[in-house]
Image 1 (cartoon, rainbow, N blue to C red):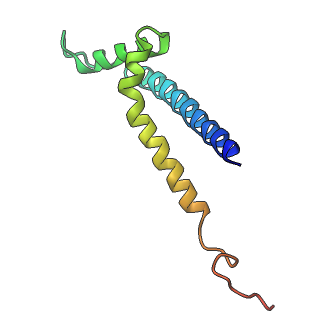
Image 2 (cartoon, rainbow, N blue to C red):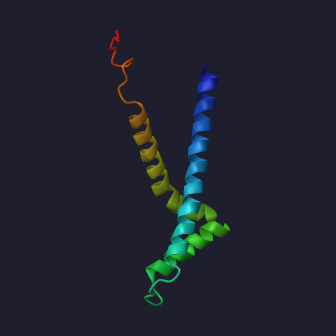
Length: 103
């Protein structure tokens, strides 16, 4: 029983990690696509720096460092969304409130 719970916990962690990586890649690509034609502020342009980080992440260069910097907010977002979904689907039902339906 304990081994099954450990295996299930690893499966859930792997699923959340893969979902985080997928969302990270998706949002990086969307950010690059939406900010390609931005008003550049020169050499220290923060948008250009962010586009460069997203491109490095998508191409795999320095992926480990970029993932460490970017995965925390995405992981927090995924966990918050998962918690919201759990709360939404765990709403009160007649069975959970022990309502007797005699119709």
